[in-house]
Image 1 (cartoon, one colour):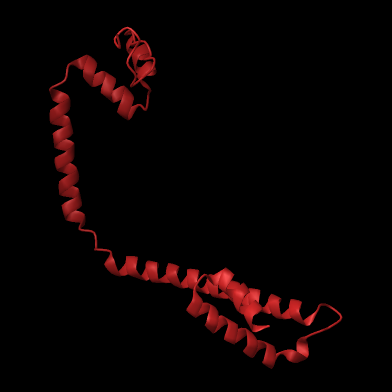
Image 2: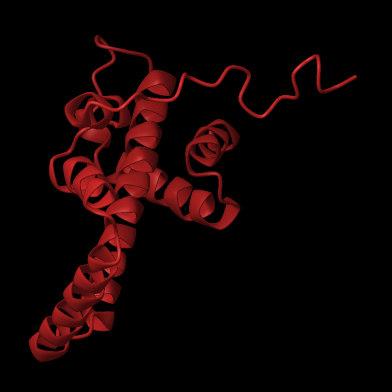
Length: 150
């Protein structure tokens, strides 16, 4: 039975060394729990392979949970504390730059930006709200037209 158990465990774990360890654990479990085997419910081979599959899946789950815990611990240990003062200074500076940039625009340009970015309107909606004609949609974006290819 050992080759069949090992083969099943190896297919689940995809790691030879871990599969060897789990195969050994399965046979230890069989030895310790032989009295639980019920020949009325299944064959001995089916019972052994069921135990092997469960043990291998448990190892996969434990490994995944361990990796998630390790990743979470790593992320917590590498997080730098926020400097609220620096963030507020950077935000104020960015706001100043945006206001200075907006001041250089014409009133129509400024209104279009405000409608798009602060109002959440699309290009077509901004055009309709400002009562300006919108450009026709481009056809064949990124491709040369047949007249320009000649």
